[in-house]
Length: 141
Image (tube, rainbow, N blue to C red; front, side, top):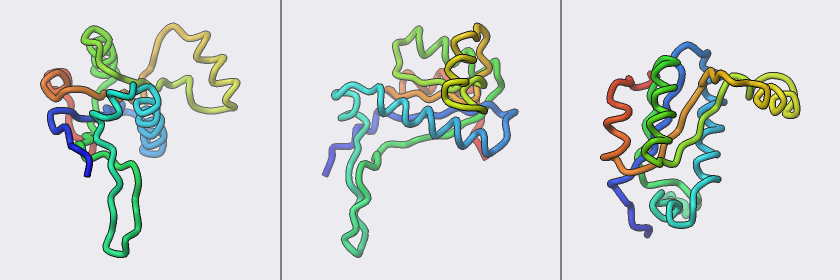
């Protein structure tokens, strides 16, 4: 059994103006990005463990930590990204240019973009650092 580091958490904040399908896509991408960016030490803190059901079926690499999904305005997400950078938090963001067309077109649009319309932002870190940054956001329902 993995030691669950309960003083850590994941948060995904989604732009409240986007459709549910786009929101799910953006949230999935930032979740993958957080895991991909994590150092070995951060991965340990993420408390990934296999869950086993009554049939002894293993559901591997599920975190024992909270993953809270919130929603906010474009301004809220912009501030969240800025604060994450300022505090050195592991974070990922997904912007408007990352959807539609081919992968190559998305890369080109993103490279040409200077203004970010955030669709989703993910954070990982200590609750004491994340909670003050996300307290103005509401739960995604």
